[in-house]
Amino acid sequence: MLNLDWSFYSWEVMSRFVLKGLQFSLLLTVVATLGGVTFGTVLALMRLSGRPWLELPATVYVNGMRSIPLVMVILWFFLLVPFVIGRPIGAELSAVITFIAFEAAYFSEIVRAGIQSIARGQVMAGYALGLTYGQNMRLVILPQAFRNMLPVFLTQTIILFQDTSLVYAIGAYDMLKGFEVAGKNYGRPIEAYLAAAVAYFVICYSLSALVKRLQAKIAIIR
Image: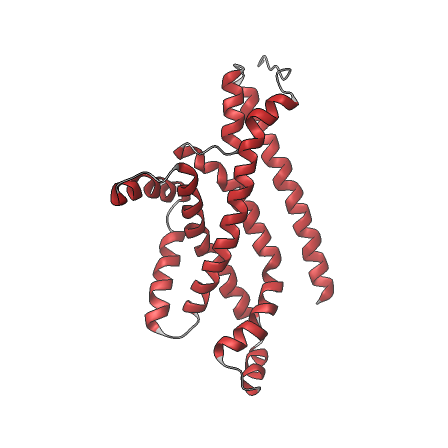
């Protein structure tokens, strides 16, 4: 039997070690989601433009990123960029840039599927009103598509939050790192990792329940 001792956990320990990491994990999730959705939307529009000079590079980028494990992209960027530019950029900034670039490929596929889910009649109606391609996308297609995609967006964001633990590989101070440091300082690494697992489960399960409720409300609106 493991001789587990949870007595060292207190608000002081949580505030000193874990909350700092949780703040970075949440910040990274929000920034990567906003940046990924923005960049991903651009990639999706490029792939749907029908112009080979836009479609080909976007397709190569999306398929390439989705074929590589995130932890490898994190390590490559963290190790190679300082070598190219001649100076380090820091683990936190490296993680932010990497996550935006990586998640954009996944959000791009979500956006593309959402746009293609809109009835063809909606597209033709916009053109019949004299709207250009850009106006049609901005005023008619994307608002409907984003509403349909919202539950999937939020689900991907939950996955993104889980993936923030991978910045541990480059030494960034995320929530997992906070638990690890607390465990090392108090000589209780097993309890620290178990507590980290529980924390991730509670946060992600709660968010998943909210997504399900939102999905039910959107289905009712339809």
